[in-house]
Length: 147
Image (cartoon, rainbow, N blue to C red; front, side):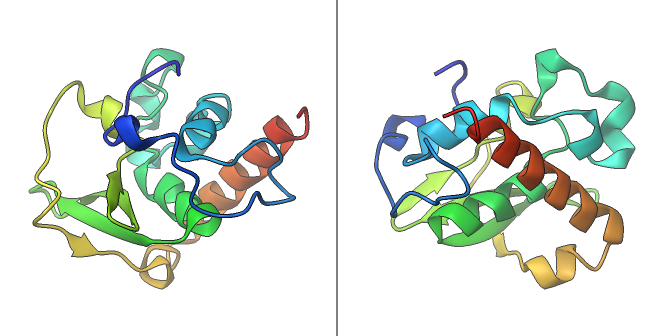
């Protein structure tokens, strides 16, 4: 694995059957590796886009990533309040917490036990966010087509 995300110690646990649209992804760890080649400035939240770079590829990717993880592995999406009215999104799958985009915070630790469940219907009211999600999903499918 090229990086470490919160929950990486459980990254090899398979949570569901492989998705034919995403060959080669059977575990959260494999998904993280594929996302590492799929995140880009265009999938980053607009307010953070000027700071996005390949060295901080998870910046501004949390909600679109968390809902894509949910599509592939089920579970629930939660958000940790950031104190500015925004939430940092992550996944709970079975009894495991995964935060595939925590690297953007450079070691900041979150309390994943005081979070609020997030609903895609609310997030995707913002058309730009829905479009970023669709672009990330498309880029991930293209990345996986090489498997």
